[in-house]
Amino acid sequence: MFSKIYDWLDERTDIRKWIRKQLEYPVPEHVTLFYCFGGLALFIIMLQVITGVFMFFFYVPKPESALESIQYLSNSVPLGWLMRNMHRWGATLLVAMVFFHMMSVIVHRAYQKPRELNWLSGLSMFMIVMLFTVTGSILPWDWRGYWVLVLWTDYIGSWPVIGEALKDPILSAFTVGRSFVTHIWILPFLSALFLFVHFKMVRKHGISGPL
Image 1 (tube, helix red, strand yellow):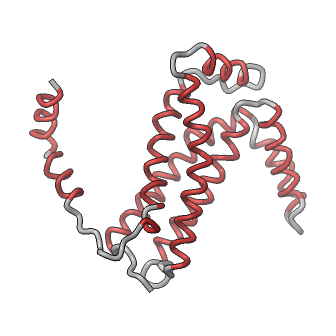
Image 2 (tube, rainbow, N blue to C red):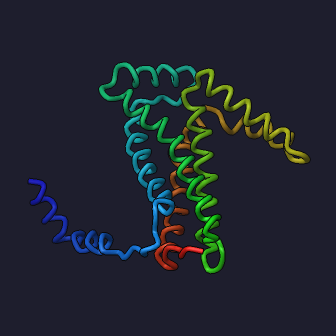
Image 3 (cartoon, rainbow, N blue to C red):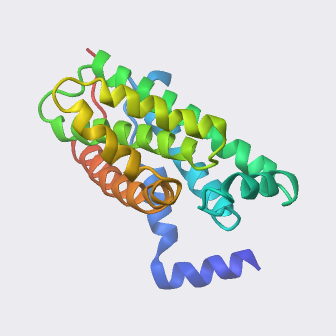
């Protein structure tokens, strides 16, 4: 049955040719494990999308119901505990993979001409991933979510000149409902945009060579 669906899809989209082209894309001989952090980050992003969509159907973005909906997901929904833990630990792994990917880029000096856009789009993705982590930590609205918001706000408030001016707007902006909208709509849209630019630049310039 699957093969028939695949043949039907291939007849209309030529997907088999596209997959073969991706699999046959040449990989330089100098590529080692240290070049794989970007690919691992992309794999974790796909897992985050799958688990996040699953959680979306059970989460209630209201301060009085958020924690209760998370507890219901974890304790009563089949595989809910697995999806939530995959999403939660996946966020930590994603931050680590993106960080190691950036360190690899710095070590190999792959941010230099003509790869400046690769670096800028990747740096933007790192900041987006950090915002994903912050907004995602707020969403359960338990003691941890509350203190994440307080600590980040206090930290920004300590910035010279602009800190105090930003403090109150951030407290107003990152309520549970607005954090939810940011987490599932705004940040995914920005991620898709920067990932598109990033991969277009990687395909254009190729993988950087060894020093």
